[in-house]
Image (cartoon, rainbow, N blue to C red; front, side, top):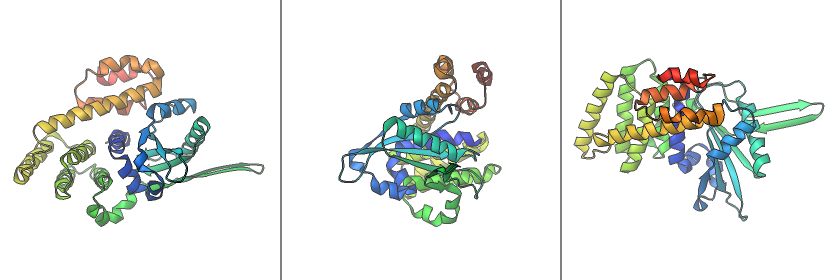
Length: 309
């Protein structure tokens, strides 16, 4: 799986479990947020900042308006970036988005990054620039998913949904060349959802992430579903088999179409949305995944059309 294809399932997970995400990865920020006041995703606003910064080919993640937990009635911004591959100018980009957001809203901004790449030593957490005594230093909190490989027992014991997300992410990367191993881990992580006592909706949501990042060849996929169905029958909890599998595929397709629409607008502006109706007719999830991944590398809409025509 190309690194870019991790973006969509992560975005879905963050939208569904934003509070749990911040509590799991950034406890200091979580403690400072007044969760009782709720929060608002500002995806459209973030797209505008990306275009203003002339970095429209890059895919950013979430901008969220939250309320600060203090004596003031004051809302602030959380810019959360999930980076699945190493990028030379990542810290600079975080700085650019930070000051653009501050300039646009005149509000405090917490820039946070989750690094899901393969190189353990790549940990960009600051950007600096200096000229003739004029100096800028920008530092931001990061978490490195590879570090959780050493904390597997803690992940196993945690009931936070993002423990499951991290486990699936790590095992998806670890088993890229090992289909049999991937099937074993996919089955293990799926059964764990029931064993942790999650509610039906959470089991389906988290399985959607597992299924998305741990795709299998058709023969192994069929074998996997046979074992899942048998396990659910034993548990008398048929949550993700039969009709739920079709619902999951439908939800995955809708999520991909949403990501494609955002990517087209970021890359090509309003002209990019002109081909969305024809893409929306595509039913195959794998083709939609290929389109989403290709948006970053193609230069014209005609190049993109060749992916699916």
